[in-house]
Every structure is written in C-alpha cells, then in structure tokens.
Image 1 (tube, one colour):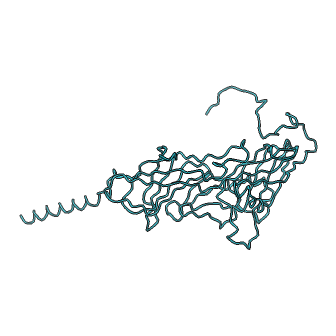
Image 2 (cartoon, one colour):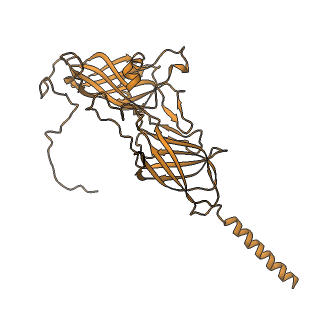
Image 3 (cartoon, rainbow, N blue to C red):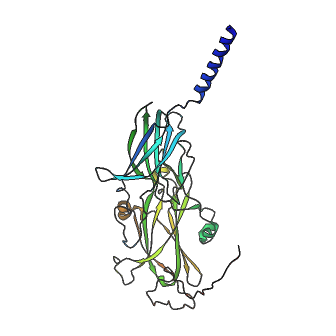
Length: 354
C-alpha cells in the first residue's frame, strides 16, 4: 500500500514538473501597443522645398514599421513584430501603431520602416550591430566610369531609401499588465541632396549618371552611428532640366535629387586630403562616354549646401558635338534621349509553347 501511494505521488510530481516546463513565461494575450509618431519636417529638400520644383523628391512616408525589442543588458533581440495601422494624433502628426507580443522585462526598442527596396538591414540580432546599407553597383555600371580604373577609387553603392528610425531605451514591460503604449518619434537616418551643373549641348546626351565619393556607406542606426571606416561612393541617375535663375541665354542644366547616409565630416581626420569628388558621366548620342570630375569640398561649404542641401555647381559641363552629328528630331531644344519614346516596333501575334 505504501509503495502504491509513493508511486502515485511520484507520478503526480512528474506530471507537475512537465507542466511547469511547458508553461509559457507570459500569456500570449499580453501585448505592447507601439505607437510611432512620424515627424519629417527636419528633412531638407524633402519637406522644406527643392531648388528645382520640377524634380521629383523621394517619398518618406512608410507603410510598415518593424519593431525590435532588445534586452537592455545583453543587447540581443528577444521579440519583434510589424505594425501598419495609421492615424493622426491631436497635434496633427501622422502615426503608425499596432500590437507586438513581448515577455516582461526591460528593453531597448528600435522601430524602422520595412518598405525600402534600396536600403537593406543586416546584423539585426544585436542592438549595437543592426546596420542599414545598400548594395554595391553592378560591374556594368562600374565599367561606365573611366576613373574606376584608378586604384584609389572607392567601392560604389546605390543610393539608399529613407529609413525612419525611432529609438527608446530602458522600456519596462511589467508582468500581467494591460496594454502598454510606447510613444516615440521617428527621424530619418538618410540625407537628401539636390545637385546641379550647367550643361552645354545637352541635346547630344542620351543618358547621364553620376558618382559622389567620400560618403558613409552604412549606418548602425540603433546606436545612431554612421560608418566612416570605408571610403565609399554612391551612384545616381541625372536628368536634364532648366534653371530660370541662371542669368544667361543657356539655362540648360543636369540635375538630380539623391540620398546618402552622410558626408564624411572633416573632424574625423583633418590631416587627410579631401576625397569629396563628383564624376558626371554622359553617354553621347553616338555612344561615346563623356566624363567630368569636380572637387566638391568647397561646394558643400556654400550657404545653399549648408542651409538647404543644394549643391549648385556654377560651371559648365560641355558635351562635344559628334563628328557627324545628326540633328535632333525636335530641333535645338530637343532633350536627346532623356525622354525616350518607342517607335517603329512591329507587332506579331502568336503562341509560344512552354
């Protein structure tokens, strides 16, 4: 009889111990409501006005926000979720909110928009290492820039999309509490610039791109640090436009709006020679590549650049006439092939076996 009682007690203890092992640390109904207030008025060009109103500016309105909860001690990620419900607060600011399931504890919270085709995120498992970056350009694009043959030239990356980041440290989630609301603000970690150079014989240009060097290639955005360890450049497309403020007969310009993780500041090492250069690359209508490289250090120090992120280059980029130039179909004011149209295509109908 005693043996039976002991056996039953042992079975009860075993079941109890298994139940304890399988019991969740927190009920899945316990959630944290995360509210991200988006304040974008501090982004020059995007929200304060572009120099050339005909140029499209990048959008910084997110659709989905990723929320990361990092243990305040270990700095490792312990929970994450995605929020997308939009609204407007009493002050008129847009916000995005949603529910994230998280265990009780103390966290450093990082939120960022999860809808950026160009901007990628790596090393997100740790608060100190989560990094935003962009991919390196293709070999085909490298081959367009003659200066790439020089050994001293940097790696070149695509321009980033705006990444809106919100950070809150030491957020306490208590056990068995109701929904906790975290109100925070999001700011972009990407700078937007407008660049322009005067253009001569633009009708002979079929395509134009540019590379700007001495920029940060990435950003450890949880700790708010741009990476300046690498001497990097960014690639972006140019377009042809006009600037009516130019007091000359020819008001033709090459211009672009581009994003970057930031210019490398002079304070890092003042003894180093500036490598802040821009290379404009134009493919002429006859297939020839025309390049022009300029030192941008003084341009970045001008008042328009400091106040509004406008890089206005008061120099002429001359496209030499081809040896046997064909007259542009639209006359002297034609935009070359910057605004291409599809003509003379034959239409064939049929079936393809797959």
